[in-house]
Length: 112
Length: 177
Image 1 (spheres, rainbow over the protein chains, first blue to last red):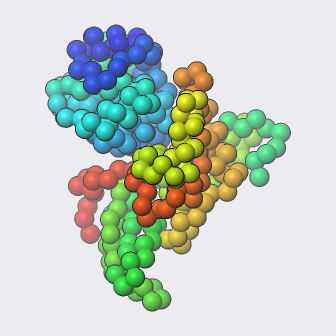
Image 2: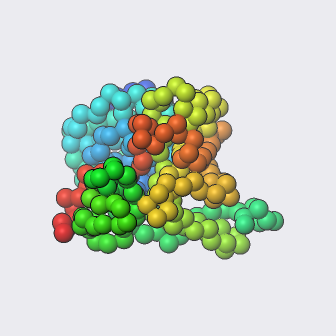
Image 3: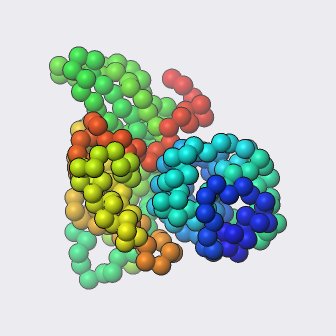
């Protein structure tokens, strides 16, 4: 499934340009250190964090998309950073659990 | 150390959680940074030589070493505190210049910040190479690379606005001392 297909299936609000990068698995955490240690390239990352360093962490481990949950407003510098590195950034009013369920129903599995 | 016949494939090992603690001397404003493995960041004042260090802040983070899955060589990173990306705050900063040059080639520069006895140091070239190799080998995007460089490429650690990748503001999840 591509990032664009994922956006459509989960009805996510895109905050920047959405590419056709393939999504392979999901990683749920609100800690950058967890993501750097555990996320795999291709994972979509679900978090409540909005600081621009989430993009730096995602870029480091090649996460193609970040979903910010619970309707959190994402600062403009975070969106600009995501544009710069080519990470798709979404937000949604759903909470983490709801997004995780929808990801699973869409066929996205947890990272091994 | 690691330039041998094995085409290393580095994986993280010995992952350990803790806190990056920053302290300031209230006489001379000297800063020291260290990693604490305690359950909560130490906040005690103490005197060391001519300095009176006060707790100035902390963030959750983790340390790791890298092990080659082929030859089992382990490279330790006790002095490595974290990685940061350039914030583009100073056009004349070497980290900024290098980051911009590399960005056009889909190479993403991260500075490794390392400390020994509270003082900032650079990681050895060998260790920077190992980190570069580790993070680049995990990528899937064609042509994309990660380049880990020494923190001393920053013009000044005092004026740099880049932020280390660490978990600030997560302390409500940990017991206060």
